[in-house]
Length: 552
Image 1 (cartoon, helix red, strand yellow):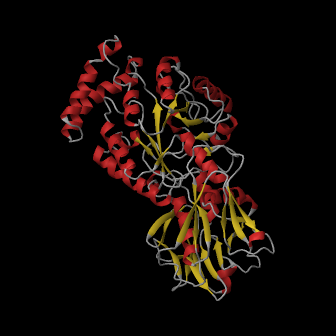
Image 2: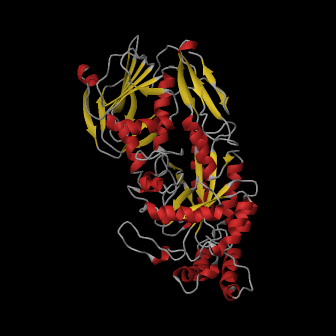
Image 3: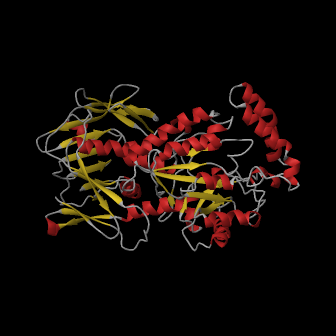
């Protein structure tokens, strides 16, 4: 059991951190025994813990009584643990204590964490504020230049590896379903379901330029094949026939998506109102943000999706800034789907503000999938796990990791198909390492002219299938994480202090994969915390209403 000593202002962040690092813990109770004690910017209570973690960027009694000289590092510096680097967004205290460095400050090569071992206790002093770092990630997010780093997952990994290295027993419910290495959530924003809805507008003129001129330029640069140029030119010159209803609308790619994802779950985010551009953070209206379709226009498509067991969710316009409008957007989609509750949202153009999570929860949404980047791919919050904003009680955030427009738009990453495949691979490998979910957004028109990003998507699906993840809709993914979050640990005094892992009894989890309970078996020896080692563990499956009893 882990005991945590933290300021009351940090409590909600502490709770969320231990929903992500799902292991037995509680806020410190005087007189209680803990194998592990974590103190964050707090006085250290009297304890007999085998392992004591002291977090904080200010000088503490630990270094005062040992006469350890310290210095302060600037914000947004990198630290390194066992060769793996991660950014620290707040202040960082450095220690002049050669010989027992645990974490290294990359720029100065000084120690950002040190350890001291005695016969009864290992003390690890870390010179940063863990829960302030977590709050920053959950509420502010990482700048785009650090998008490739799963910083929050690395904080969890650092704590886990230090515990395991000290051979203190540890129990954890993994953030991945039993029998799978991670989850894949395929999503599609429905922005332009038909090219015939766009006549003499910016979307049409942009299409014609990119199809007729941009294709040739890309061909000369080696970015397009002659076949792709021909497809784009053919599509451009077929527009009169498309508008007359005499040729297939080449932006209607629904059947192709259903064919590619025939055996896979996926989710479609649909804009609820036609012609509503909404308002941005500065009160401005950008007309090109408005959808050119209404729900009746795509009624047949929506019925086809429902018949294929695909999820339909809200691609919101103003829900991010107005809960009443958000409620209206949700209800419009619910009238189409027939769903009574548990409907999700992703904001059009990924609009999100300081109050958005609160407003979306007030509007009645079950989850949000807006948190990501327009301009790049990666980890906005530093994690592949579903998480909860500290200011809400129910709404969960399904982070967005990969978006096609970020990969291919000239103003963003501007990658070729091959380069995009290389760029996406580390995110897949990170999910396989840490668990969680890879959330992908491939827009509705992206398989057809002039984008023709179909080969890249097919290759991505091939890479994912080879790793046998669980393909789930956004709603299913959120439901599985709710199942994990609702599972509790109970100290069973009747069993000599053993830990009983109990699934929730009031949560509908039919059809969801089981959980995996991992137990790292500890001994009593002290090791070099800066060096890596292979930890021994045992896994158990937790499903339904069964319980798992972990012996003390």
